[in-house]
Length: 245
View (cartoon, rainbow, N blue to C red):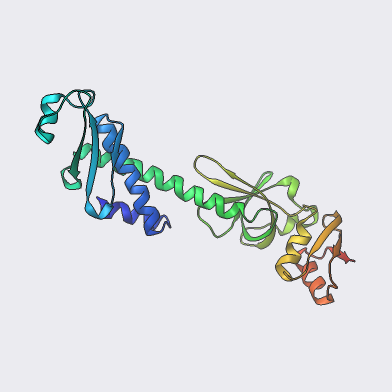
């Protein structure tokens, strides 16, 4: 079972340490639920041992506790080690279910943190589908879904929003839902030209003063901007005029 679960974790893109940690948490929870105890611990997954803490007689009758530890009294706390191979089948099944659920949560948590760092920047994506007032965008990450709502479309570009067409987008916000991470995108944002400029010429710091999306943008830069950079920016903005001072 352990090998199978580790394969599931790796398939989700988690590194070895994250997979082992997630498996350990799932196994400990499944074990505690089975024995209805509050505490159990795995020191090292390679040892294949789980230590369960029983309170006498709350978790284990005195007579049963004496089998493991000799003479005991009420209110004693005893620790019993169990080998992974001796775990009940139901514990293994519960561990599997919990592990798959935790892997999904960890995967989405990591995707959320990764994309959260990119907010207010420009990212590249490919139009996947246009349906009604919503465009879905493939961002090259199976853990997220890119979304651009109609209010963030540039009217003069709508004919270009076809499946398979690549664009740069402004990353507005990242939302972590229960089963997915949503990346909300825009091409109308006032700050989009500056974000694109940072991709083209990262050594230039610029601020957006005004923008009529699809028509013209006015930027202020901390250093001269060469014409070839401005032309590259205009191409990414699909011909939008750019004035830099």
